[in-house]
Image (cartoon, rainbow, N blue to C red; front, side, top):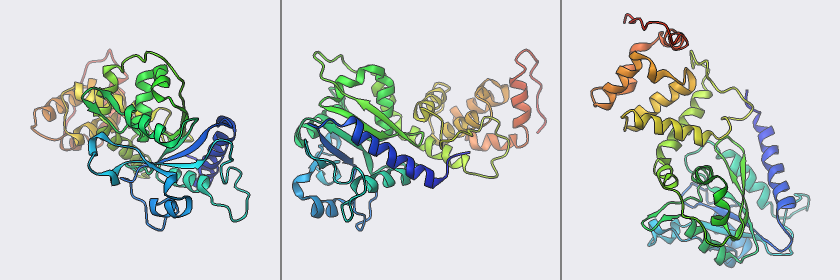
Length: 334
């Protein structure tokens, strides 16, 4: 069972307040990174127009996007919440009448954790002024000489960190700490450090980023499936405290990668197979019936959704067969 929404709200706020108190050094700025391509109502206190009124124009620094150079309104915004030596305005959330940027942003991050596009891209600390950090964030997305990705997006950042393991810290600098919402429903904290002679990013980092649209669709579909009361036979169903298991984005990537390795290309087919592997049995492609379905879908003869509709009531039977690897494969009667 997942944690109640009120508990999650308290957890998000506590995590952010601890980040501000324990990870931010006295000589560092505190930043909030926002993505204007995600929806944000004009009456939201975190809307850029309202932030400019409250904090001043100089407090918002655009982060250039190489994929939309001629559309600066689509560029992320780096909001300066505190300068070196100054406390975050509401780090303790106990000053009557004080702005509640941390509380508002923590609550917003929790509310949008299941959405495809997130407005809150995380909280960052750095000794460097806004423009230097904005330029570094723009450069972070240049994975090779010809390819740029918006890796500031939370799912992309999580996957980049996983692909690089410990090799991301030098690329993050001058960001010293980055608290980012993650795919599980909580946060990841990444640390940056100064490093000479940065190693080139591995090809896998770029390959993973290219699959993010399908990975995101799977994460959304996975969450929706787990919220259903009529899910049916689903022995592999996630039942942990958090909405999704740890490193859910990585698990979703592996599902998409495996489906593509089997010849699937259409997103609906990839999701149909991935969800059943996540809910019913991870080795479903090994069953002759499912293998035939995958081959048919890969040839474009029928969608997996259409093929799988024939198996209504047989998923438990196939799951038992997969658990008897030495048994002969009987043919079902449709």
